[in-house]
Length: 97
Image (cartoon, rainbow, N blue to C red; front, side, top):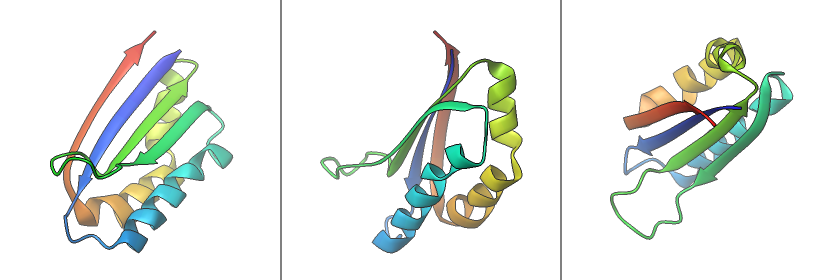
């Protein structure tokens, strides 16, 4: 299994409904991207001020499946329309298990 983990820190003044829309849009991706095997999108519980806002943990059969996800037009639209305009910082890693 190949994993992709992302932490997104959004601007502090990002409205709750905008974060909800982002989370909901990400959670719909497994319905349109066939290479996703496991997919979790979670919003921070708000227990520490310096935490990320949203986390994504995705699993794929292999690196090729990840590349399909990474480059998929629906995923790219979520990034362009809902993430990038409010993004402060992104951290990610990919690994095999």
